Image 1 (cartoon, rainbow, N blue to C red):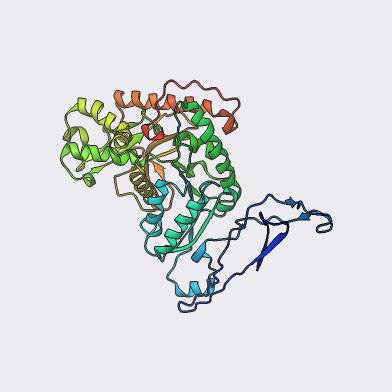
Image 2 (image 1 turned 30 degrees about the vertical axis):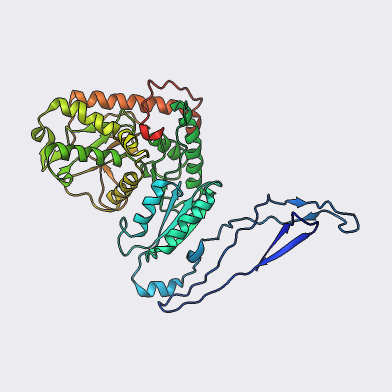
Length: 441
């Protein structure tokens, strides 16, 4: 039983209310559950003191009220407040070890699409249980409760636990995957340097939290923009986690490039392979048609319009998000969620022979001559264990190298702009131009 003391606004006395918990035991599947319904008390500062304005013969001294944490660390949400009989669960031999997935910005539109894809087993398979830790802000807390209610009502058999909260040091505990979606959008009149600083502080703090409490081999996918530099900030603040484990999402750009090549060639998109997005998730990104293939043939042998490839194709991929916003009045939340799921599947599923995928990864040790100590989108392969290797059999021409160099210069400038957040000294912002994607506005 929990006791909450609450000051009545209409009378001069302290009212104590007892909140009862309920227990439920189920054994039909060799599992014992403990269900605990949690009520949120009025939030008060720790060690709060309440003084009543009443006559001295009624109250002789201030009344100290023990602060109650609205979401204790071991709390959980609704039907997911369950404790499993682990031995019985092992006896069934039907479940793998639960994967802990933390999602920031969990009350946003991208997450609203992504969470249900994850819970359905689309990414990790139909025999892989998962636990979700949903991170939001104080302002979005009730929305987080709504998200958890929807997950509850969907009856996903693989979803064994849901926790919601606003403290990354609690939510990131033992995380195997961290999907960092939440970030401040760019407001009217805001310079890119300003957005780099504001969002950089968010990702610096989340990097520290991951470093402190997450699994030492946690895989991190940064979606919040500017995602390449945010990923760099995050990894710099998490020295215990391998830098190789951090990714900036460029899979949506890859998917868009495949779509445009398929449309131009008159084939279905699954005929397009070996598509690379090089560089930054900005309008300096480089969709690589030189190494891409259609039906196993080099793109330039199938699409012989060089001008279209260099100008229209590249621009369509770079500006696709802005066109969508203009048409629909909202950003590409659903396709972004699909691309996050695709990026995860590329790491947990062996890459088809001869193919590869794009991801923004750490450049140190890369075979392409790209500046080290950046997060730069490059071609990757995976054997399905969550790790990856960079593809070595890549060809370059002058056009491709010039474009890659331009994106590299932009990321080097962004890195100088956030030096105060990466432990590399005083920030100097000399961004060459504003190349922000429309979806970041």
